Image 1: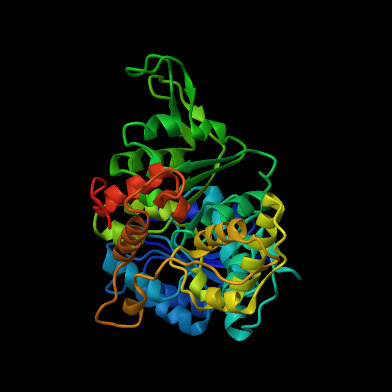
Image 2: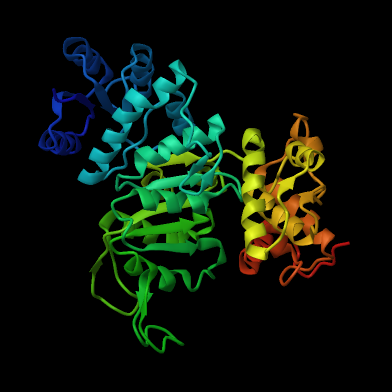
Length: 457
């Protein structure tokens, strides 16, 4: 039996377009309501399985008012409107929607988003509330190279399993070093594009003057220094996946051009008037709070919604305490093989040191700490780990001294710079310790206001 969907939208053209998309895909549209009052009548008469709600409707009540009623009735719903300010967005999110569909609607996005929402309602979020015991990723805690058996990680893995085989956009959210790039690789592996290319772009390391050329390419003579044609990352990713890492660092003017490429699925190389169709799946990642960036006019709201079709929040390592030992043993085995070392195990005292540490650099920091320790260990057992002093431990539990992510990041970078006497790149430099390319670290330092010419002691 086909799913019954109610459309609550007061703009006739948009509502009619949605109805045609849904009916063509086999859904049964119970009706179109243009106000909360008429929606109530439709819900009572038809008992829809799912509701699509615009936020701003005819009459005194909004879609948010209706959403609260749907939540009480346990009827899943998606919001249709992205034309709201931050306060409205916060109010909408509190109702627990299964996502936001962006206007103008594209058939593929509508159907994929609805399919994922239905799946989540039947098997994901609601099931989790009723049954908090999750399946393990694998008997050895390894899911396509993602290691861990904690409930927090298993929830992420389940989301990857759901969204991976689809073709929808994914937004990976989480602190630096949590493994967002690995998550993107797994999503690509699980998709029907796995035989196609996975093209990665670090938005933070690209100079603003070059990012358009890197993404879209250019023709010979398009600008001074363009001595030959260059194929951009979008074209390179045709038939595969484009991973836009650190998307929150992209300049505003470039965001508008990226949005057009995502909406139209076409690009133009610089210096060319020819339109190139690009069949590309986009995965984006950021360690920034994009909603805050939107509210402070540093990130476009329409681009945020276009990317935020399926958000995945990756927990920091400190919230995955049960995974630390498994990850550490994995890294030890990997580096012992790589360097031909005799190390066979981590001693109890050394493991306790790892478990007691808060890991501000997350998995990346654990990886590099383990690599250095294996290199320095000559016995068959690791007895101690040299860990970076934790700069923000006292602030974590004090409500009066809680710092923003940017403040914590800045303080952590300065602490590492001090430990290496201000050395940014090269062996033993801050970039190496933080697991970042020197260009990315320099970009982060500039963004955070850290004086690159300062001496740190």
